[in-house]
Amino acid sequence: FDLKTLPVDFVECLMRFLPTENEVKVLRLYERERKPIENLSDEDRFMMQFSKIERLMQKMTIMAFIGNFAESIQMLTPQLHAIIAASVSIKSSQKLKKILEIILALGNYMNSSKRGAVYGFKLQSLDLLLETKSTDRKQTLLHYISNVVKEKYQHVSLFYNELHYVEKAAAVSLENVLLDVKELQRGLDLTKREYTMHDHNTMLKEFIQNNEGKLKKLQDDAKIAQDAFDDAVKYFGENPKTTPPSVFFPVFVRFVKAYKQAEEENELRKKQEQALMEKLMEQEALMEQQDQKSPSHKTKRQQQELIAELRRRQVKDNRHVYEGKDGAIEDIITGKR
Image 1 (spheres, rainbow, N blue to C red):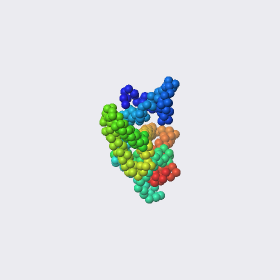
Image 2 (image 1 turned 90 degrees about the vertical axis):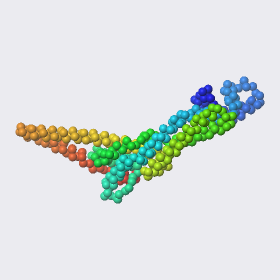
Image 3 (image 1 turned 60 degrees about the vertical axis):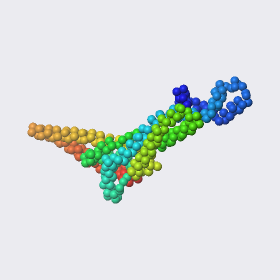
Image 4 (image 1 turned 90 degrees about the horizontal axis):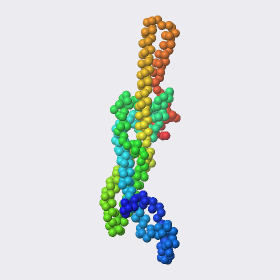
């Protein structure tokens, strides 16, 4: 079991060439019949030596397990921690809760003439906020929500700062991670059995003593991750059995990304509107100066038309009627899509 003499990469390579049970029987029969070994090919002689080792596959499996154990712990632990952090932060975020309440209230208001109030919506319906656009197709409902939040609920505008490791959690297959944790336990159990059969091998003893606690910690993390994720999914009215992390967390990743983009676009639009207003004021000031100098009728008319156009655009940009895509606004609050 000395991995310094036989590195784990070499062990895993050898495992692909170990003789099968039938090949071992044939080689042992060949030896019992006292046939000349030199008649065998180099490959068969190599297999002959392997076939004489008791529990060869079990021992090689244990060596591979021991060699990969530290890397497995190092790989699985951050994934479990990401699930825990993301699940807890999403469920406990009061700012996110307020944002969702605002969306629900807006949906109820926009549909007040068509149906009674509803008390919730499917998380997947958050994606539809980008499909509901103003009549001029320049803004989505999410742009409007972002504006409302900034103007009236600014204390929750940075709700996404309360969400931790959501993107990392979205990339985790919790089912596969839990299976890997169980596989590590099976590997440790196999190592313990071999230890009792191998005259209490010192290397196996040290490995078990040094790493049994690490596996127990990983198993505890796995239990916490599973419970935290189930609690978060149920909190939002979803079913953990049909809503894995690869479905649940990406909803929030997409929503946060779209919300931040809406914030940036709103800010850009505000700057553009401010520039328009400044230009309008400059034109009005110029008209006053030219009035004092008795400008020509044509020049005055052109200036008046420009000012009227600027005012019209200013009003249009600030008055939006939102239309749902194929009834999208109803779907946002009922979650029918």
